[in-house]
Every structure is written in structure tokens, then in C-alpha cells.
Image (spheres, rainbow, N blue to C red):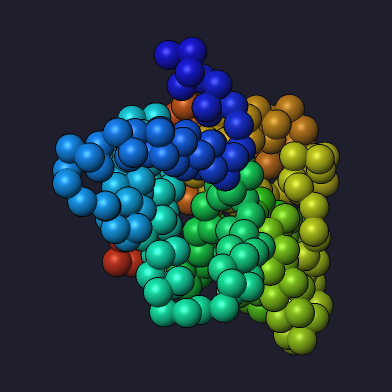
Length: 259
């Protein structure tokens, strides 16, 4: 239990690398002892496949998210396949860097890049207060499609997005600047460092991990009458004041709390 708590306290990407390092060290120590009994030298691909299976099993035992388990399973054998295909060595760190810049919040904060679909964006527009001048924030705005959709339909309201993953931020900032709506502002800033009292409505589509802290922060900082909307994820020990089901393929649920 102590080890599990320690693992969960690290950024996920560090925990993933630590698991791979431990498995590799054990493999390296055991393989010379096993090969004489097997009667042959184990090919590198099977070594890496074995490492991936072991790392995935450990990650699953520590309750890593499913995408991390999948990455642990496939990364070592894919590396060998890449070498077999004579891919340039610079390609591997380049691909890793691009993935890291896109999924930065998964690697650091256990918050995946979830994208809000169009039907949910349309439903969000209908839930906004029917008055001008309000300010709406998207906590983890991704590529800002939701904000741009709402801003186009509510030109007299203000929309702010917070995004710390570099590539989604750059893409969303450029698309916003090129778009027709001038009431959208994308900030390269963590919403944890922002006073949420400046917003009338908060929207987020994150993960179960930060929901309790976000709700506590919103409750302490937002003005009375504010609205906090979560796509799909509940706040522990705080029942939503209203739940709206979107008529999309996944029956998206929007959970709404009045502050």
C-alpha cells in the first residue's frame, strides 16, 4: 500500500519510466541465468515483448490508466521493430517529444486530452445564462473547439480557455486568432493558478482525478450564483444539482452544480 501511494505521487511519465527501468534491470540480471537452461539465446524482440508484458502487468497492478498499460505493453517491442526497419535514431525521440507536447497533461497531471463533441457543445450553449456580459471558462480547453462553437453563438458573452499542453495551446490560439469570433481568449496557463472568481460559468472535461480539488476551488472562489459544469465526471461526495443527458452516441452527461 505504501509503494502504491508513492507511485501515485509521482508524475505518471516518471512512474512509467521507473517501471520500465526496474523490469529491464531484472530482465538483464535473469536472462544470463535462464538462457543456459533454454539452450538458445533469446532474440531481442522476444526479450522486449517479455519486458512489455511485465511492465504492463505491473502498471495494471498499480492501477495505472488503461492507456499507460497499453503504452507499457507496446513500447519495447515497437522500439525493436523500428530498429529492424532501419528507422533513423532521431525519429524515436522526435515522435516521443511530439506525443509529449500533445498529451502533456496526461504525462504530468493524469488528465487526458478529451475532446467535447459538437452536440455537447450545442447543449452547453443552451445551458448558459440568458444574459450578456457573462464570462465562461473552459478548464483544459484542448484545441478550443467548444469555446469557438459557443463564442460564435453567443457574441455578447466572453469565453476564456486554459491549456498547458504546448501543441493544443498553439493550435487553439492560432485557430482562435484566425476565426471570426473576437470574444475568445486562450491562455497558456494552469487554471490552478487562476482566481476563478472572475468567471460566471466553469466547464471542464478532465478525469476523475482532479474533480474534488476543482470543485473545492470553484466553491471557494466563484461568486454566488456561479455555475460549474463537468462533462461526465462526478465530484466525490457532492451530488450534482442537475444532470443533463446529451443525445449523442455516448449519451454524454453534463453534471451541473450551482455555487
